[in-house]
Length: 493
Length: 77
Image (cartoon, rainbow over all chains, first blue to last red; front, side):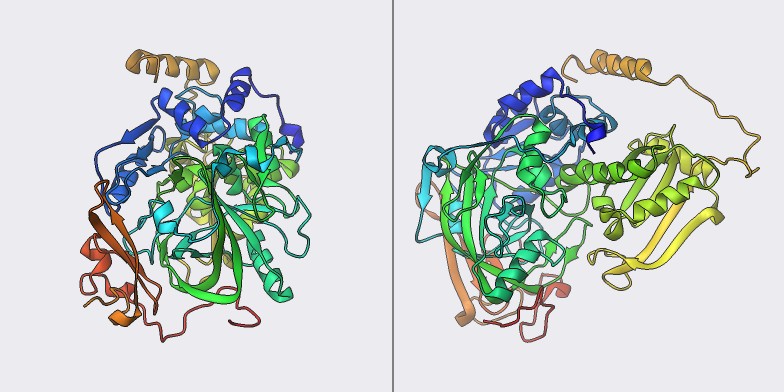
C-alpha cells in the first residue's frame, strides 16, 4: 500500500509526539471537550453499562467517560469510550473536531505504509508499567474494577485487552509475535479464559503449544496507547508486527520494554498481566454480547493462569461497551476494516473511490466505484468478496457510483432509491461466513447479497432519459459547511 | 442458601470469590463463582442477571450437557 503513503501534517506529527500513552490521550481529549469524568457514585451493574450505552449513542462526538467513584472499588479508575466516536479518532490523528468520516478514511489510507518499525526500547526498570510488580497472591477482582458488560454475559469480561503472544515454536521471531484483541473472562482470582479460533494468530499459537507440549506465555496489556488498540484489532499478515504498524500510523516511536515473561510490551501501558496457557484445559465460557448485537453462546475454551502483574501507580482500567450497534467496537475497528479492503481492490481496480465497511465489522459494506462499462461494479463486488476480510465478513454489498459518498447514508439511500432495479441484485448462496452471524441458517455458512446501485451505462437503455441535478459540491462547499457549523456552535464545533 | 442463578448448582459448588468494601471498610457486595457452570455474579446486580426465576430461561446452562469445544486439545487435562 506504499503508493498511497503521504507525509503526515505538522499537526499530526505534533499530536503523535505528544501522545505516548492512554493517560496522555485522556488529557488531550479532556482539553478538547471529548473526555468527561463521572464522579457521582455508581453501582458496577447496571450503572456502568447504562452510562456507557448512553455516551456511545453519538458516534460522531460522544466522549470518553472516566469513572472514579464505583461502589466497592474505592480509589479505582475505569475509562470507557476512548475510541467511542469519530471525533476522538480525528483528534488522535491530528484533525480538528468536525472532520468527516470520509476524510478520516483517506487519512488512514495515506498512513498505511510498509512495516518499518519506529520503536524505542527501554529497560524494564525504567518503564512506568513496572512501577508496581505483583508476583504472588494474584487477585484480578481486587486489581480491576470489573463488571458485567451485558446483563446475560457469563461473567465479568475484559473487552479491550491487547494480548501479546509469540509463536511457541519460534519464540525469538519478532514479526511472528502477535498483538490482538481477544475477549477475556475472569474465571478465578488468578485465572481467566481467552477466546480465540484457529484462524487467529493466537489460535495458531495455542494449538502449536498444545501439540508440541511446550508452554505458551502471553502478556495482556490493559490501558494502552490509543493507536495500539486500533491496530491490535486490524488483521495484518502473520509475519507482520502490530507494534510496527501502530508506530507507523502515528509517525512517532512507540516505547517498548520486555515483560517478565519475555514478550515485547508497551512501556507506558497501565497494567500488564503475564500469564501461561493451561495446556489441555477447556472451561465454560460465555455467553458474551458480541459485535453483531447478539450473544455468542456457551462454549468450552482455553484457560490461562496469571504468573505476574505489573502496573502503574493508580492504574486506569480501560474497557469497552460492545453489543447491539452503534458501539465503541464499531468506531474502534471500522476504518481499519475498511482500509485494507480498499487497498486490495485499488490494486486491480483504480476506479474504486472508497470503501465503507463500518457496519458490524463489514457484514454490510458500501463501495463507491466509477463504472468503466455496464456491469463493472458487479465485477468489483466479486473481487471484494475474495479479499481476506471479504471472504468471511462482507455479507451485504451495496455498490454506488463515484459521485456518492459511501460514508454518507443519505447519499447511499438516494443511490438505492434511484439507481437500483429489483431484478438486478445478486444472491450467491452457501458461501463461507463468520459463525456469529445471527441470521445464519447454518453457523459458518451463508448467502451473499450484491446490490448494484450504480447508474446505468450503454448498452443498457433504462434510465438513460433522466438527467441528474448537479448541486454545487467539492472542497469549497465543504468549507462553507464547516463555516456554518462554527457560526452555529462556536470555534470548538 | 445460595445457589447458582444460571444452573441452580447447590451451595457446595459456589465459591465466595471476592468482597468489595467502601472507603470506610464496610462491605458493599460479594462476588460468587459457580464451579459447575463457571458463572460469576455479584450479589448487588439486578434480578435479571442473578435471580434464576427472573432470568430468561434461554440463558440457563446444564453443565452435564455437551457444549462446543473450541480447538479441542489432543489431550484433556
